[in-house]
Image (cartoon, rainbow, N blue to C red; front, side, top):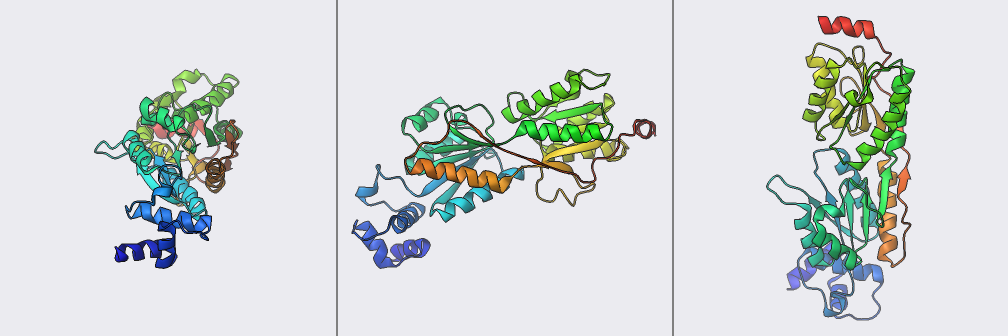
Length: 344
């Protein structure tokens, strides 16, 4: 047992004597030190003192994400984790797996640990199912949703302003002379995609394109393969520019453009979304709309900390402004050159 206490002490950054004082619920221990030791006990699977079971939440925070393939998710996880560590809180990463581990499985495990809170990134607590969703609400578990996939009124939410992102991307392509602009979105019902779609519809209704906006919108899974399949359809409709709901979709679209014998941006201009790592060094460097990852992570941590401290948070969704980053994947519309490429 002494060896395990020394592990706990080393993890918490305190002495073994301090760990023993926390276990004995002795006076004179600062809240921060106590939280660090309790968190270390959780990490090593040791029982907490009776006085700190059930009524006092642990120092673990669950980070629930749909997957780690999309580079924006690890970036947001890192941003949130850094802020939580500064508060003396440890993170537990929970992501779906190919063998069937779901949000519900993780929520059950997190509830057993009596966690301090949960941050859902690109997901929703509703994904855990009605039973666990109800338990989360009834137990008052502090929660924050970052870029939630669906509507979640009454829960603290931090999101990039998807409408502003779509406006920036469409305005950029329009300024380059593009009117036949395609839109590649995530699955039907995905709220961030729906918000981008609303802006796109308003834009296209004032555009002199000879296609209806419905023809030029494609919903696919968030993957390079999805972006490639969507681009195949859009090329047949004569688009000269495409706005994508993620950088992965944009890369898949570019790959399809090149496989069809066209070039980027001379044949088709492509705009991504996220500004994921390495988008500045791909060929062609991707024009994209950058999410303010650090600001979003800091805001999420602040909202979670406020709830952990027993204070209320605003019910309105906090929207942060994105930034258009112009690179080499967009250029002036050249319909004649594009038509010539397509014939070759």
